[in-house]
Amino acid sequence: MPQCRGLQNSMRLAIAAIAAACLACFLGQASANDGNATGLVLVAATGNFGSETLTLINSYRVSRGLSPLASNGTLQALARQHSRYQAARNKLSHDGFRQRSARAKAAGLSVVCAENSGYNYKNAQQLFLGWRNSAAHRKNLLRPNLRYAGISVVGAYSTFFACE
Image (cartoon, rainbow, N blue to C red; front, side, top):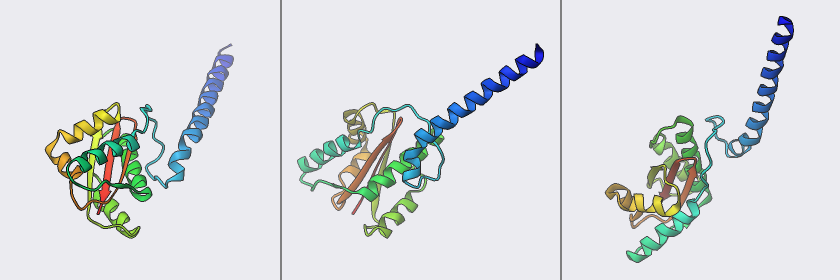
């Protein structure tokens, strides 16, 4: 019987490995589609309320006499990549900001960019208020020459990336 237990344990491990591989393939499709080289990120989904946050930011900018920011696919992808990077490391950061700015420039945008990161905001209103109520983050939201933006939320991590 000890050989049967060993075989049962091996089969359980094999089934668990197959299930994990299937889950990784399913969840990894989004990572593969945007060239994310950071690997698979398993995070609790809170929803991506980036577009709602941009709407709130634009209302705030207009109320201050500034032009709204246009959503930009390149900046959205860069924000998503950075939010995934933070989630994979479980660390709030601005790592790679210069590289993101260079990629924006390569896509025909300005190299002059601004970035806000956030952690553990549950919805667009909370995220916007967190940034608005922080002097440094508010300064980025209200930079008058910004024209384009991308915002992404992955798990508990949020990124606002905007350029002139």
